[in-house]
Image (tube, rainbow, N blue to C red):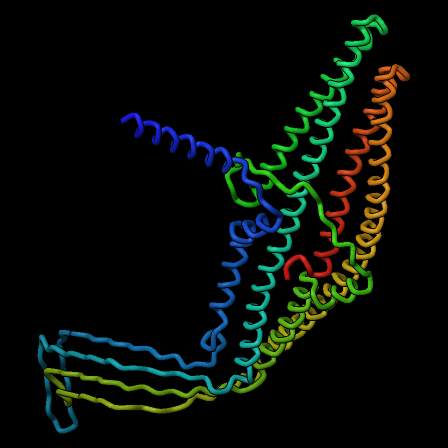
Length: 437
């Protein structure tokens, strides 16, 4: 019995360990992206809209297939009938009943409509293609936000690590100041100042922890996960550093989603003009029906009339004049095409300008990152020397505090520089259509 209890206790402890570790599961940027692509609401909405466009892209919706219908009708009537025939026969009856039944299958097939059906088919294909492009745009926007949020967490984490390191220095500084005070080599002012500075750093650490929690909540919202879910992230912010301006400029025309979307609008406008111009031409329909009809009367010349058979025919129509409405529609659609073309050129110009600014910002961010990396090394070396000098009594507490502040600022600037470089890199990827492969 005791052995079983020990075994159960061991299992409970093991499960608690798994639960505790699961609460702070570390996720990579690749995992965060995968979760976002699967869960994000905007992407799901875009996928559903794309499915609607796919469902609408059919031969029937383009008008290329026949329309088949089944109809049935029946009547039962009771009338007073009076009929006089040329033969002199007279029929005068009350309560005369008659029955009529008609049922059949009807087919109508437009075989020529000025080629409108083909233009409509192409327009539906472009709309389907735009639906897929909308998914990519939603993915790009989501991933840009996810990348920014993820590396915001990394940046806050790096700042927190720097604060913790500085707090350790302050604790050591407090110990040294306390020893100096105990042996009478310094005043209590250094001890009190060390405590005040350390408390200030702990307060700053608490604020950074709050910012870290808020950053995690923002990422959880983007990933459609419980807002209070805790997790860990990578410790570094990797950069590719292999972008060339000319390559990015060429990629905009062929890969940028906003520009491709604008091009689709131009194509759709052209197909709409072709659809409208089709109204200038005649329209030919083939008709077929297979009908059964039966009529019974208790009085009259025909007491029973029944038909069953196949009927074939055609309908040819041509609208010669309709008040110049077709011409007005075509003119307006041409204006719409012109606007779509202007919008394309405007979007292209804005993207090219945006690329120039983003690339300069990216180059500047890399230069700042390199400078701040060296500066952090210098600040660290200066801090180590200052601690040693303080231990030997060759510097004051105020001097060490100043060096500590400089080191903390160097850490914060370096973390911000890494984050800014990553954000700039992501902007370049989005402009060149490289966020979603």
